[in-house]
Amino acid sequence: MTKKLAFIGLGVMGYPMAGHLQKAGHRVTVYNRTTDKAEMWCREYGGDMAATPCDAARDADIVFACVGNDDDVRSVTLGKEGAFAGMKQGSAFVDHTTASASLARELQQLATDGGKLFLDAPVSGGQAGAENGALTIMIGGDAAAFETAEPVMDCYAHKMKYLGVAGSGQIAKMANQVCIAGVVQGLAEALHFLQAADMDGAEVIEAISKGAAQSWQMENRYEAMLKGEFDFGFAVDWMRKDLAIVLEEARHNGASLPLTALVDQFYAEVQDMGGGRWDTSSLIARLNRNRQPEKSK
Image (tube, rainbow, N blue to C red):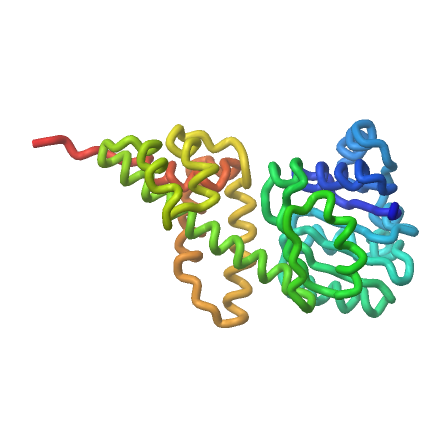
């Protein structure tokens, strides 16, 4: 069924996600802080653009957002020009931003007080997943909103999972980032170790990639890591933003995350190397920067 939708935030993720919605036959109005990007999206996909989040959300059945951080989410949802001010009774707000669980709970309460529905629905899969319509979506919030939004989000989702109350989606995304941080560090160390041992890393990965060591990161990033190419995928700056959210949540719930804290500091070193916009597999660059192979005696 065709729905009237709004999409707020046309970054590397939001731009193709909004495009999938328009191509699926829905009527999409977009808002982006930089109007040039919104104009470009309209030229590519059709649809409409709005001057404010409030205008974009007006009369929409579902309002989607994918912006940068907690402050960005607040700026597009709250206030007289925010999306909540323009949303009609019974409509749903779906936040695809990776943000804090506390913000999700806050916005869910505000939405409920205003007669609207709310979902925190962060995504995983990166730019390629957004462009190919193959994202994983972790969802918390109103069950009724999920029933409404699920068939709409299907056009850019490979996997969706409703996990419970508001904040549950964000907690799941935090766990996702914890797993990625540990796996990438392990893969970086393995490849660094093979290079130090004068082994062919590609051949070794071929040997071990179908066994217990197999991972998405191994299959999709090892070649670029061996070549020292880090110009695609999820940026280090973004990962550090996400890990800061994880570590703050852990301070509140008492979880012990020593490996995550350590890898976060490794990413800080990559930033100091000028690699803030490198993708997250660049952890190997930190290991290789001072490598001095031991000479045979």
